[in-house]
Image (cartoon, rainbow, N blue to C red; front, side):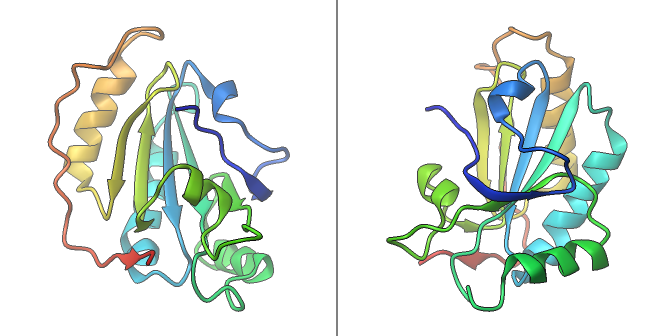
Length: 174
């Protein structure tokens, strides 16, 4: 499956980003809603830490604000204020709203179950993990270390790390 983000707008980056243009680097995409407690207290701080800890030549962190509930309050203007207040400096895509569903375009296309959801793409641009809920820092660090240590073009098909969820609260897309 080809994964691209369908964004109506991007924050913290001068231009739109395409996952296909990031091949050669490991990419972390964290799908969130600003009113999701687990996102605000666990997943976004984790994404910020990753963004600050790794070189952009090895790892790119992208936030994906996927609003599937409370649309009237989670507007782009509210998100800009949230991003400023929480000091989020990594690129954030605003998932394009769907005309026929409360679930936005990328969330639908990627069959995300809710927020927070963490996706890892290897250097070849292949999705190696889609995890609903919070992934423990130690497990995530081990996975990223393995992905970053592989050369571009090297397969990650043998990666076997059990992504057991933590106990952070999650918001369900029903």
